[in-house]
Length: 107
View 1 (cartoon, rainbow, N blue to C red):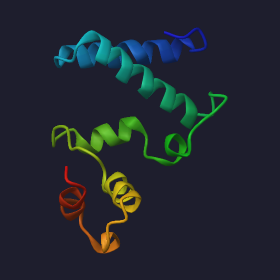
View 2 (cartoon, rainbow, N blue to C red):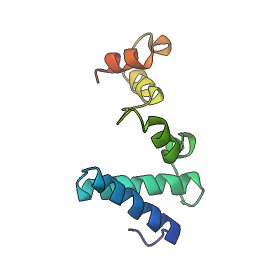
View 3 (cartoon, rainbow, N blue to C red):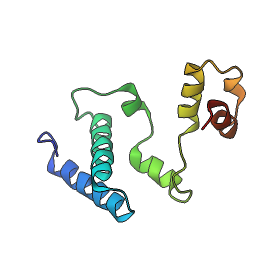
View 4 (cartoon, helix red, strand yellow):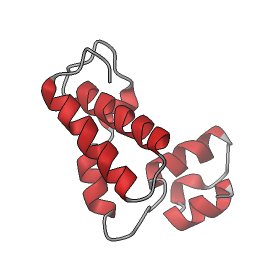
């Protein structure tokens, strides 16, 4: 864990990491996901020196997890799929549903 994290963020990191390990994720993967999640939350709260636009404009990790908790690993959001379609210059993407975007980007 980086030294720049507060006690609150260290607890958050441990909680996320332990939860992922309990669900069968390898320790190294759990550490990476937990660190990314904590860093994103720090950026959203204005605690980080630098923050990407995605970190500050996307819905919070906790909210996203709550929305998807009953659906399993729901995959990427429609906005993420739309961005990939935009980068690939897929025609008609603005009127596509999430399922159509998934099919169009091939995932």
